[in-house]
Structures are given as structure tokens and as C-alpha cells.
Image (cartoon, rainbow, N blue to C red; front, side, top):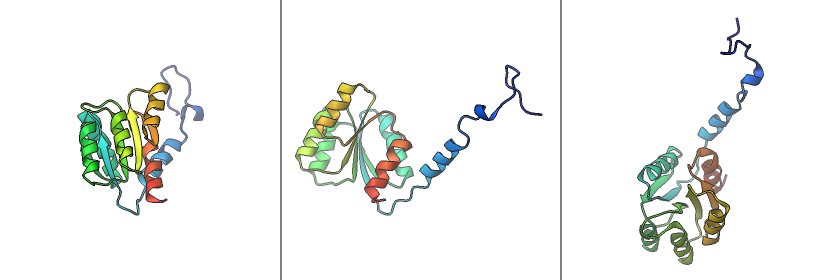
Length: 156
């Protein structure tokens, strides 16, 4: 006997909204294999967000370093440390993400920069892109957005 819905109607294939697509997408996202050891700097003033972003990157074997403000990010880059990817929040203490991005780009850094923020308006997106990020993503950072970037960086 087919399971019944609370309304008493029979379940149908249309009720199975993803028809296996979600499971396949999850499988593809977890199958990423990077040929090169990638490194990423995560700049986020919110400890929880920074830790979660680092954990997501580490789940794909990306070596990470995290800082909680723009000044420390700029100082780290100025010291000669190189990264394949910089993930930077717009709203940061000490030195905001827009100015930190400008200063990092002014140092001649050409690595991929991903701007993430909870501010999702068009003006915020334009400001972040004008500052020098390559990609703008509304928080939270998720595998669907991250995996294509990692594959691009890895040359796949």
C-alpha cells in the first residue's frame, strides 16, 4: 500500500521533487579531487563564519589560514605569504573588506579573490567587484559556489 500524505492523497512522482538530482549533485560535489595543493586565506570578522568556511575548504583538502580583520590580511600578504584563493568578507573590523581588497590588489596580488557578505544588494556587489574581487557571493559560502572555483584554480 502506498504511503498517504496527511491530506489523504496518494504520493506521486511529482511529490519526489528532485527525482535523484539532489543526490547526484551531492555525489559530484564530494568527488572533487584536486591535483595540486591549494592554499586559501579566509578573512572574516565573525569567528563562526570564518571557522565554517575554513572547514568547508579543508573538506576539499585546501590548506587554509584565517584572520579576523582586513589589516591582518594585508599584513600577511605584505609579508610575502602567497595564496591561491582569498575569501574576504565585506564587513571587517579595523580595515573593511573593500579597502583590504584594494590594498592587496595594489600590492600586485593576482590570485583569485572571492568576496562574501551578508549584504546582498546590487550596490554592495558593484562596490566589491570595483575594489578588486573576482567573484561576489552572498553568505553562506557553499559547495555549489566553491567547487567550480576550486576546479578552476586546480586547472580542471
